[in-house]
Image (cartoon, rainbow, N blue to C red; front, top):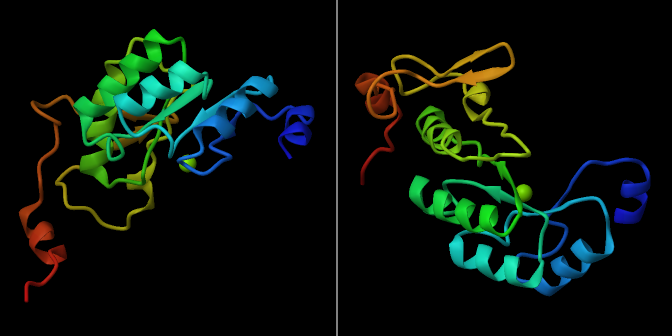
Length: 165
Ligand SMILES: [Mg+2]
């Protein structure tokens, strides 16, 4: 299948193998010119180190949820960057808080060759922040306030809170 996609001019292949089958991912990365991106296979810096060691991927998909937060994502990115592996800023369709947290982290990376697609908030009908993330001119604009630059809407938060007991 990858041979046909490559011949058709596809730009990128995302994690075509099960998470734990790193050697298979490495064989595909060696066999094809089209870049192979690790997603499920790269959840933290240790995964990144092992994939770099075996030539397991051309691109790493970074996600703050996979890596345990912004700092874990940055550590994963640093390993990829040092190994010459291109980076992509992924999403697990987080809401506004998670999306803006990821955006702040991605903004600090020296290279993000495959860009990002932080569109999670666009899928939501309502939100738990007072001012929703701003999408304009096909870009997500970072809030300028302190911290994440977001303020929780406490009434909405209470409204959507899962009922206890
Ligand atoms: Mg994926």
